[in-house]
Image 1 (cartoon, rainbow, N blue to C red):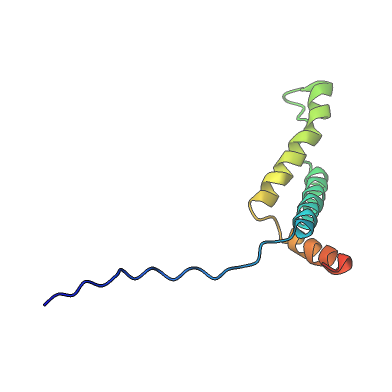
Image 2 (cartoon, rainbow, N blue to C red):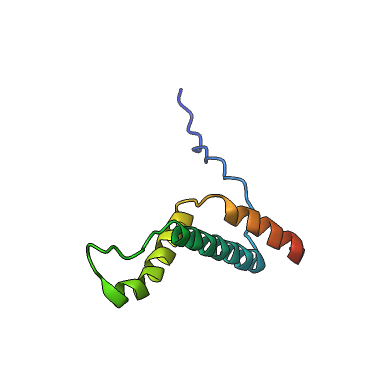
Length: 97
């Protein structure tokens, strides 16, 4: 004899508190700090420096900073070098969030 039982619902994932708006602001500030740091490191390494073989002139020199900034942002979006988490923790501690 078959009895009909209700299907068992999967267990819900544990509820994690949503980050506060303040934490989101601090995390974004930390990501921007890491982006700026990496852009300066790329500049020191010569990334985006105009090549004499192409002779991009003044325009290339002016826009190379944008290239470095976006490359640094892409690096942070891909996980960065871990500075943003350290910056976030320091900012969070300082702000007592």
